[in-house]
Structure formats: structure tokens, C-alpha cells
Image 1 (cartoon, rainbow, N blue to C red):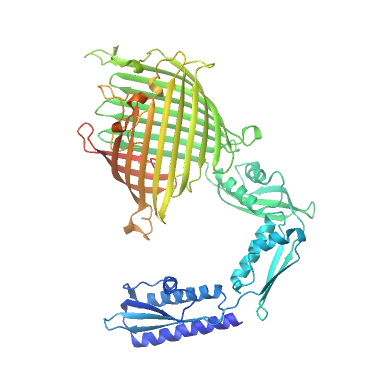
Image 2 (image 1 turned 30 degrees about the vertical axis):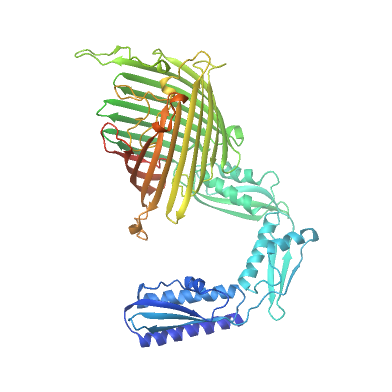
Length: 620
């Protein structure tokens, strides 16, 4: 009752002071001058002013200022109340200054501070008493504040929920005269989850949601709030449900058993996408994709994607496509099985290249952030160097291109069979538009040996770090490296397996695959060594902040560096290439639509001043 009376008195004081101020000054808007604080001892002036939230020198409208001031004074009172000052009174005075501005004086009467003298916990089993006291975190001398003391009771409830006592009850009683806090615990019996019941599903099987929660509850199946939350998150990750509700009810089978009830609202399972792209001077691209996330009603996913690109200046053509089938629970176990069938073809002046292959692989989530993967790659490819067709002729002729020995090509079809292991860590906050966290990927591939085809091995590493600067601003960094080497009967790495760099997703300011060794016709020979580094500042435009519909418009400033090299001896820092520029992004739920303009730094490329890129998704 004392705290309620104190609040009423403080509020009355605020209202009366405001009424007096409005009688003295009746302007519609005004500029706020100096802000002073008097009577405060526990909190410094700067802390009180920060809680009030008003800014010196700002222009305020009368009606808006009243609401802001009332909220600010209430915040100051709440901060004192949390520290045990139950009789605190916060008022204000508002007066005109000689410069025509209004000066605000915040008046604080702290009153006596109440502290806890003794903490008593009853109803707790002796073996858990020490742990419960640690969970409470309340010791003699702590502020006698009802919100803080009730929050301690919630922490104890969480402690019991994590140990199977799902029906435990914790109450807090405060004797303000003696400053004694009594916590009473009714532990009850431990609960085990009996079964998971799913409802609301029409086109998905009930086991899809049930197995995700069962997986988190096993092996103990104790009622643990954190495991239920993780299970709920796993159900969302299936991509099948728009929303869902998870609740726990008593089981009819036994008094110490409980059932998990999951009510789902199914989402759309089919998707379709169109992705146009462009990079100057004249390269255009167009991609299509279709998929189904619930094949056979069991969350097995099928996707078909294809893209084409054409360069008018070089008369180059590129086409690629893949069909991917994913089984999230392989043979009923927590392993994800993936099979991809892919095809790629590139046609440049003097170069025809195609490859097709099959990639089966199996992956397993070790933790929510860490995934291990292993699989195979069976590929057939061919690279042809051709003379341009003569006028009136309908085909091209093979030619000698005079390539260095390390780029020697075998023009008949070749096979590549390899096994691949990879590790992925994704601790970023968003898969499509990350603002904070770390992403890391590494893979090792070995081809040939006891398997058929060319002999080579390749290693790739990629590390990305996202650092949030503000609510809508972040710095993204990336380091990407790769190395490939032939062995055995293979003397040179085939063209289709070499690294390339330059363009919208690597080093901007250069054409696609425009870095590293090139032929006189302008197509990339690639290299056995790859190194790229990127830094990008991403921020929402200040002038769109708070405007509905415009908050998705962001800008970017970037600096990129990198190249590819044929051999270690040629990998020197003076051969690094740098690019810099700016971009505009419009964020969607599946990533941004991106428009970038980049310039080569410390030199030009083919006498061009810069390059334009239109693409989907962040470059890293």
C-alpha cells in the first residue's frame, strides 16, 4: 500500500506541476533549454537525464512534450523503486529562460532506502537448497524491491523446469516491517514426457513435428523447458508451418507423466523464383527456380534450378542447372541425405566447356550451429579449344592455343570421382541478412587414387564475421582461400576445377572471372591458388528510418581484394587486385536485391572506370 500511495503522490505532483507550467506558458511549440536535476544522490545527473529522455536544444510540440515528460519521470521513479526507494517522489519545474527557451528542473525526493535483512527458502529438498539459493541471487543488503524479488522467484521456477519439476510452484512473501523475504516452494513430482500429440496438420504427417520435439527430449524425456523451446525451433526450421503452439498437459496414463500438444498452422509448400542479374559492360543473366518442401507429405524437399548468362561483347554463353532432392531424416535417423544432379556449359570465343555430375552426400548437425558433411562427386567433363568458324562454315576447327604446360588441356571427355568432407559453423543471427555473429566453412576434396578419373586434391576455407554497430548498421568481413594440386598420373589441374575470381560475389570492380591469368580472347584460365578478402559496411539509410515500407532500403560501402595464382612462386602481394565502391540493397525475407557499383583501385581494367552489378543476396 505504501508503494501505491507513493506512486499516487508522485503522479499528483507531476500533474499539478504540469498544470502550473501550462498556465505560465501556453505556446504551441517551444525549444527546450537547460535540464537540471536536484535532490538525487543514488543516481548521477547524467543517468537521471538519460531516463527522462528529453534533449536539450530540441523543439517540442506542447501536447507531445507532456507525454514524453510524464513517461520520463515515471522511468526515473521506476529506477529508484527498483533500488528499494519505495517512497521516492519525482516532480519537475518548467520555466522560461532569458533566451526564450524553457528550462526543465527535475526534482527528486529519494526518501529512505529499504533493504533485505533476511532471506528464507522453505519447502526445498536439502540436496537442492544451495542451488536454489544461487538461483535466487538475493542476499541480505539487496534492495527490498517487489519486482526484483519476484523476478528471483521466476529464476527458481526456471531452475525446477530444467530438472523435470514442471509443476513446481514458487511464491514470494515480503514482510516490510522486518525486511524478511520468504520464498515458499512446492516442488511436486518429477514429470516425464509421455508422448507428443500433433493437431492442425492436413497435408503433413504428424510425425514430422513430433520427431523434432522427441529428438530434443531424448534420452531422459524429462520435462525441460529449454528442450521444449529447442524442439519448437526445430519444428519451425522444417519450413512447413506458418506458426505453431506448444503446450504441456497432464497425461491420463500416470500422475508423473505429461503430454506435449503441438498445434500447427501449415504454410505453402511450393515456391518459385526468378532472379535476373547484370554486370557491366554487357553481361546479363536470368535464373529460375521451383521447389516443393513437402514431397510425399514427409518434409522431403525437391528443387529444380537453372540459369543462363550471355555476354554481348565477348559473345559468351553460360548455362547451368541442377536437380536436388533432400531427405531430412535418412532411414529414420537424424542424418540429412542430399542428392544433386547438375550440368554446366560455358561457350567463349575459342573455348567450349561442359560438365555434368552427380553429388550424393550425408550431413549431420552436431549442435545448432555446427554441421559435418561427407559425400562423393561423380563428374564427366570436356574442354575444347576451337578456332572460330570460317565465313560460311557451320562448325569450328580444333586449334593449338599455345598454353603454358601447367594449363595443358586434354580435349577428350574426362572423368572425375572424388570424396568430400566439410565442416560448417553458422553462428550468425540471420541466414539471409546477418548483422552479427560468425560463419565458417572448410572442405577437403580428394579425387582419383583408388577412384576413377583425374588425380587431384583441393582444400577451401571461408570465414565471415559480422559486427553490429547499431540497430540497423553492421560491418561484414570475409576471408576466402583455396588451394588445389594434382598428383599421381595427373600433371595439370583441369580447367573446370581451377579457381576463378572477380565479379559480383568476389572482387567487385572487375568483370566476372576477370582476375588471374587470361587468354588473349579474354576468358579466364584460372589458378591453383585463391585468396580473397572483403570488408563491407551495411546500414539503413538515415532518411528512411521510421518510415513504413522504406525501412528495408539499405546502403553499403565496400572494399574487396584478391586474385588467383598458378603457382606459389607467383603469389606475391603486388599481384593482389583491389576494388572499392558502394551499393544499394532492398532487403526481402529471402535476402536482399543488390545493386553495386565497383571500381578497380590502383589501376584500371581494359580502360574501364568501373563495373555495375545487379544480383540477389549478399556477396558474403
